[in-house]
Length: 90
Image (cartoon, rainbow, N blue to C red; front, top):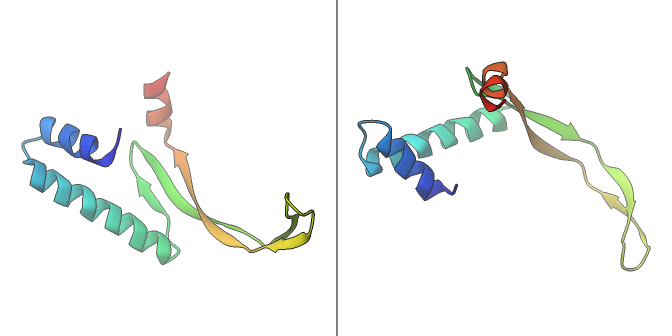
């Protein structure tokens, strides 16, 4: 499912127009990005929790040349599904 299909699904299952659904989805994504960039977790009841996980720098090798390189550290987004979501999928 891509973003436009998600907007259509939101519009179909609510009383919102496609434009209102798009605005609501964009607002939700903006808030999640903003909170994560501030280092906060974003728990959504019944869905799960978005959080940042820091992966430190590490040594690696260039597969083409075999040269030793340093892979820089980075923040990665982590999602942990809520029990309600896991139960709904089984």
